[in-house]
Structure formats: structure tokens, C-alpha cells
Amino acid sequence: MNNMVVLISGRGSNMRAMVEAGLPVAAVISNRAEAAGLEYAAGRGIATAVVSHRGYATREAFDAALALAVDAFHPGLVALAGFMRILSAGFVQRYQGRLLNIHPSLLPAFAGLDTHARALAAGVKLHGCTVHFVTAELDHGPIVVQAAVPVFVRDDATSLAARVLAQEHRIYPQAARWFLDGKLVIENGIVRVNGDHPQQLYAP
Ligand code: GRF
Image (cartoon, rainbow, N blue to C red; front, side):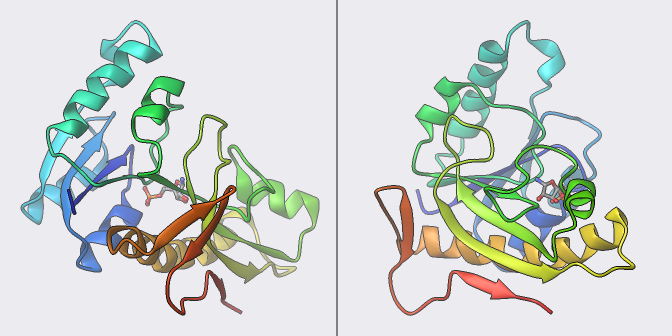
């Protein structure tokens, strides 16, 4: 139970950061066979699986197949890392309290897609990323850790995304480690970390 399964859809750089941090990644599962991250995981001797959403008529049927694939590894933690499918309430319920996600904004600002372009359009001066527990509401759920980065006048969505991504690679492995070490406590929707661990990071 002290291992984790990572769900990806593409590049998989957050998954890679977790592997490189020495986290016990038992398997990497993708809904897209062409996800680049699968190759990296296989190259590291990590089990991989593809559950294509195209093969299922309903979200529920896909999620049931996905859950079967996940449960084969008996993970203590399931980490969504660029997994581009909205999960059904049933799936979220099944993994409640052991399902984490990383989102490229300082939630609750900019839930959803295109966060970097939207942050630029809004003129925010700080942007960042958030690791949170997954609940039925998209990109909501108790916040574990956030990293903030500055937004510069010269930024475009690409440069801003790169600055944020570098911080994603720091906070997601950290959050997963805390979880697996049993350090995370959720009380009234607020996450605390046992011990003296800052839950925020500023990366000027
Ligand atoms: C990251 O920006 C993550 O926050 C978002 O999707 C992107 C995935 O990147 N949910 P990668 O596949 O981990 O490289």
C-alpha cells in the first residue's frame, strides 16, 4: 500500500520528477497510447498500461476499466499528472483521500484549461501551481502545497508555463512524499503537514 500509481495523458514530466525523486511509482497508466511519458517509465523498468477512453461508450465505463487497471497495483496513492480526462464521481469517491492532482495555477484562481494565457489576460502579478486532493468538483479540493512565481511584462504563455512547470516538479514529488509518509492531515477541508514543513514556495 505504500506505493503509488501515476496517471498521465502526455509528456509526463511531473511523473518523471516523481520517479527521479525516488518515489515508489509502481505503475504509470495513460489514456493515450502515444503519451511520451510511457516510454520514459518503461525505460525505467516501471510497469505501464494504457486504458484508452476511446474504447468505452460512457465515462463511467471508462472509469471502471481505469479503476481495474489502477487497483491491480494496490496503490496507497494515485497521482494525476497531466491526466486530461474528467473523472466520474464514482472514480473520485473510490480513491477519496488518496487521489492527488497538480494544477498549473494558484487555485482557486484559474481552474480549468489554458491557465497561463488566462493569467496573462487577467494581468495577475503572481501565478503558480497547486497540488490538491481531488474531489468531485473539477480543480477544487483540499490544497496540499502551492508554489508562486512572478509574472513578468515580457512573458507569454510559453515562458510563463515553463516557469510554473519548474515549480510543479518541486512541489508534486514533495506532496506525494508527505502523503506516503502519512504526514498529511485534512481537517474541515484544510490540509496540514505534520512536522515543520512549509506548504508554500516562492520562486522569484
Ligand atoms: C502540467 O502543467 C500539469 O500541471 C497539468 O498538465 C501539465 C502536465 O505536464 N495538469 P506533464 O505531462 O507532467 O509534463
